[in-house]
Length: 300
Image (cartoon, rainbow, N blue to C red; front, side, top):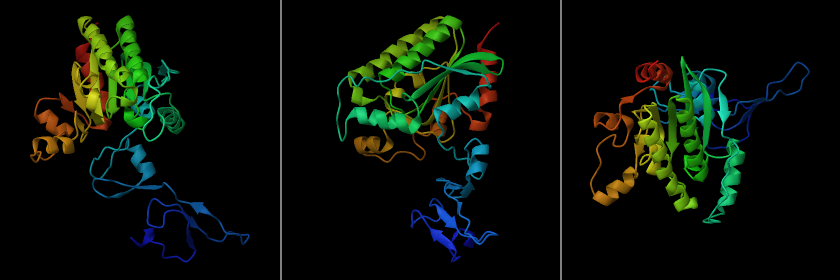
């Protein structure tokens, strides 16, 4: 492991002095003209939180952000999710919707500032993207949530975007797929956020009456009002391995019932064993699995 240590006097630390892997280091070999050459190594390596293996970031990304050693599924964003599932040539729709901060809410800082920071960080208007495209031979409507946007929480914009995705499915009779990744309802919007649960559930009931397939893919984490709403209403509910899925968190439940929870409680494998999920599918197998499921669920 000496490769990762600063044993060479020519290595100048330039970053977090307590990190061997995440800090930016500046190597100073001498070039042909006698000038030092600076090579940045920041972000080339990442440590798996499960098996603690140091992974080459490019290799991890090539493996759909799944640890090749232990199979741990790293979180990925909404754009990556859409690119992973849909064939090239998809179209993003229903963009440009932004929250109006209906309550003028302020906690540690104003909600408007949180929104602006999240929009700048992610490049998104809110915590969801909707795309129209092909999943193998099937035309689908796909909505994917973005966890890095205020914890993927659902406010008026997320609810309206999903409602519009449902309307598109009803109009075209194309199957709807929603990828959930959320901490729950966005309480900075109060009852406005809570009403989105009822609005979406009503739309999904219309999909069911029209016999249009709806598949929900639950990823890490799917909690709170999202689990209590559309995440568990699919004709087919599937999840990635190791995903945290539940309403209240494990610590809150333990404090409430004053009992130790079983090993793996609220993880996707535990929920599959107890009948809350239809399947747990590794990320690399999701696309062929969904294509095969839609083959069964759709008719000519």
